[in-house]
Length: 501
Image (cartoon, rainbow, N blue to C red; front, side):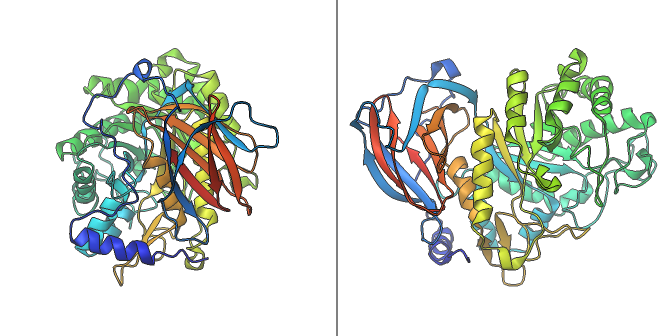
């Protein structure tokens, strides 16, 4: 089914050219300029006298993060077993939310550079503006090349163990200018973390940036120094780096840039080289993310690294992806929950996910958005503090990608016409990123029917945002129930809603 973007694009083009609003309904907190309160400072919440604003995205409708209803609470007391409910309890609070975002890759930057200026402004507003778009607050980028680059490259000359030739000059053509525009669009309110896909070929035992291989022990220190140089080089360009992951997908031998670490190798590289090097270079405040691979092996990796106190002290959190169904199974959300329960002092961050195997005939499939919604709800309910999509923008082929690993993104550009196509995934992500603000605390949320999925957060301004997804073919009427008060909500088939109260 092809997504009907006509109304959105007509409104957005005119509004953006006139520097007016492209509005899905304002969600910007009046407290944006104030210090975010600590978890214990969040005000108690009462449903009494509250109204509920309902924002809806639904298949086979024109609803795209559209304000569709305003509801009121009424006393209802004990619900009956036959009454469908989504129970929300703001007094039960869990992890603190950091934000939602996407990856600012070479592919996204190169595609962005081809767009007409007005379309560049549209894209920046659509992703990063709090009111006109979906308010991304998180971003990932690559340390030299990855598969979503037009070619393989590094920041040093071949064989330069001392890194005397280190330079990010390559990135000044597309990626650095792109990230600077993103930072301007967010007014600097963007946490950026960076991930390497492979060390330079001369540092690896296969002498190849592609096809797996391992980092040679004699280059452990050089490779640790490389991270520090990257962070300092980007920061000298005005791009602050919030954190790094140790290695993208350290158990996958890929036809693109890849490097294999066992759990013990990743642990020892971190505790003996990377962690001490960043501290010595005055970069000890940078967040270090371990694993950065799928949910399938996440517990084994986390438990091995975090069992070592010298390694664990450098670990801010565990990053993970969603590609574990490569083996033919389902996404393994319970593994995330187990890591959270076992290591509650470490953070969980979703670092990458996309729909792969690009096919332009499938660009309108609604199930893409539902894949995002299902993952985000489960991941947040299992303790995740932030969620980062893969490429924020790709071209009409699902690239550029120098090994032909073409994928879907929430927004695709036609580089011949300059047009933008927004997929269902863009809107599903927006139901979280637009209405849940950094500093929010997840609160208890429990549907009484398996037809519905939900998560909920208490924002720093005292407002509650409840996300409810209905992936079924049937309409659902349910009560949004808080402390004996309820509002009646109508959920369309294949829809996602954010309820703000």
